[in-house]
Length: 288
Image (cartoon, rainbow, N blue to C red; front, side, top):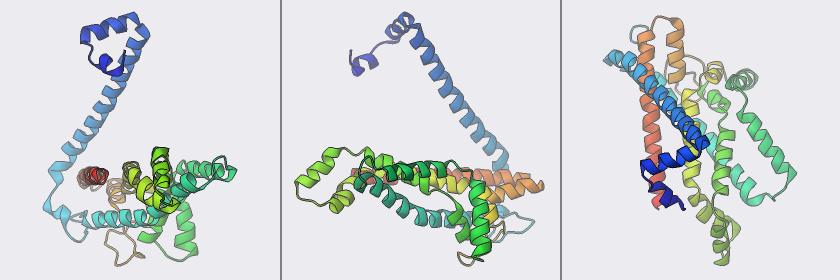
């Protein structure tokens, strides 16, 4: 019985099949329960944030300059966008080209490549506060940059994430694509950039989306490197807080809890907008 035939079974036939195999029925119930719990928790968090934050979305919250009266989110919003773009500008080229080297150019069974992969996985598992402390000691103190947007962007470790997702995306491209390109006379470099990378764009973009989510939600590393100044810096060496840090500072002070919930709503909307735009871009690139 093929997959299409199984999908066309009626509910009664499926129930009879489950009764003949109790283990499958129990597994089906556990899978449905896990999916239901996950969906319920997600809906609860969204509703909780919206109910507590929407009533305090006032015009003063969107003032250009932050004061103790308005607790404006505009400087933090601008800093979040700048931090995201700067971090991606640094990490995406290195991550993609490193993955291309590991998959397309490095020989299979190379022990040095295994060491690189192990190191990458280890780096992705280190808590972000460790990177924040390293950034404070090296970029802020040793290099005398001070608290700055650039120091924060360099301390957000999204490079391993982009490397691993890009590597898996490149591995998912069939070898027949490469063989066909070589058969038509294309070289290695042209095959990689004209055939392999375009085919792997959806997987690469998925890794970039995950990286954006990590940047937007980062707090520990940025407190020690980018600082908590509630203003838009004049350049990359200026200090500024992102939305996540802004929300943390408001809630930790205990005087602006309503504004903190409103900031959470803005952060939620920002993540949804970024994911939607990324999905639209991925579909267009795939069609091309």
